[in-house]
Image (cartoon, rainbow, N blue to C red; front, side, top):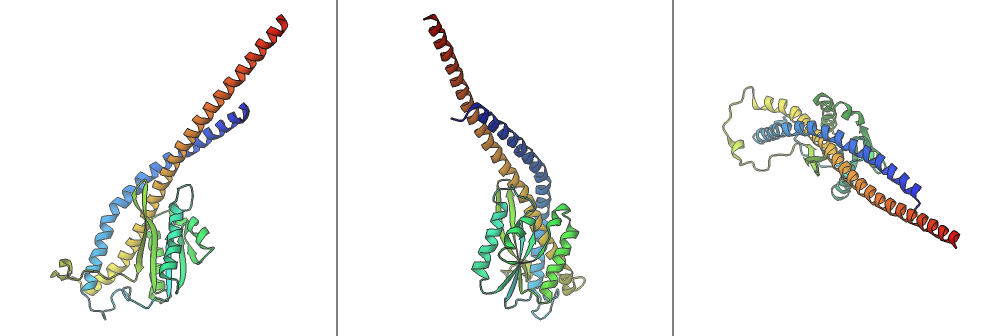
Length: 290
């Protein structure tokens, strides 16, 4: 059994750890509320905008060249994967789930084509740069996460697709469900996926377009793509705080349990030491009397 001083030192160390993890949990909980409100408010707008764009695109002729060929389906020879992680750790399996999904996607879908990585978040860059070619990193984005800053990234991705640098661009991120659950998603960013059910009533509805349908689509496509990427990053941002809050909550609970066990061990060791001292005193007194 460890001596009393060693146990006291371990208890002190665990109490310090508990203070840190508890503080981090409170900070993440405060940030999560704001991030959750932002992504919850944005999802309906993003979904409706994407649905509208798909409905309009489905009614256009294939040779209309709407939106700078962002809907053009090409033979895939080079792929860009946008991996969205975080800049900091201590958030459970949040970052590892993304890196594992990237590796799995490359192995299962793109084993015979060239794949590059566009890393948003330091943790993803640190891991993926060891296996793949990372063409760009945007670690500073989370310091000022705004639609304008994300739009610059979306524009660069759109330009790389339009000039033929990449034939397909996919985004891998954690979708926020609740504080304890994040769902890893793989979404096709470019080319724009055609609507699956072209017989839908929304497609066949009799619309009056002003200005022309083509002009509307050309204006909607860049906005829709920017919104889609912004939603993905916002989802990831909320997921990060939820994962960190949950991880720190579990860490605090584990530290509390370990502290209680050590306190019990310490009290037993202290009682044993006191008992031994009493026995030595009694034995010494009896020896003197004899």
